[in-house]
Amino acid sequence: MNPKIVKQRAKKKEEKRKFLLELLSSVNSLTEFGNKLGVTRERARQLVRDYSLPYDKKQKVKERHLIKFKERDETIISDYQSGMTIGQISIKYKIHECIISKILKNNSIDISIGWRSNKQKRNEIIFCMYKQGVKRETIAKKFNIHKAHVYNICRKMFRKEGVFLKRGQHYPGLIYTK
Image (tube, rainbow, N blue to C red; front, side):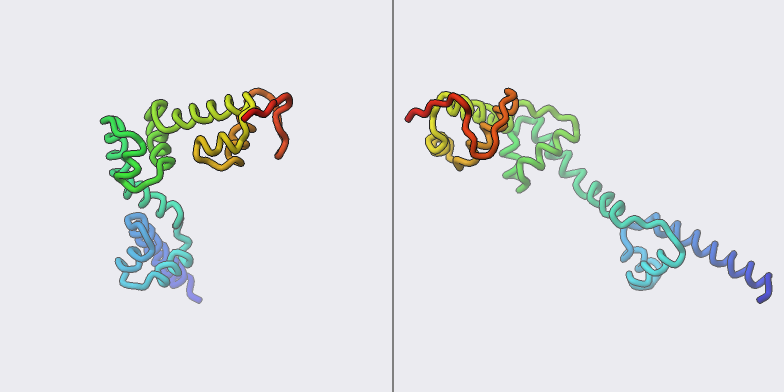
């Protein structure tokens, strides 16, 4: 084959690659990329592969996600700072409380006063009752939780004190009362 033709083809291919790379960086998905070129999404994917274009689908999805939820997160933060509780915000936006607390933590918002501190207080009360000898079933009924959950809470609290219980093992020296 003629060396001039080979050079021309390589030059055209490189120009097309630059054009495709520029176009790909301006869109969010392969579907958009294909629409701008007038081809299907599958053909767009093949072009990305054939021209070795850098396309990270996960990164593009992550960028879209960040853009989509940025406004929502800002309103959640402003609601929390205006005095709404995490529970009220979760009802308003139909989002679980854990996700709201993550949003607040990721934006360096202090959530020391809120639902987590109430949970900690409850766990401390449960642990205190358990150490006093109150049966797990009684504690579970009082706090409307399962008796296995009571045991798991107590295991964690014992672990903090340096006492390690195996599953099913009870605290040594525990005297059961009614």
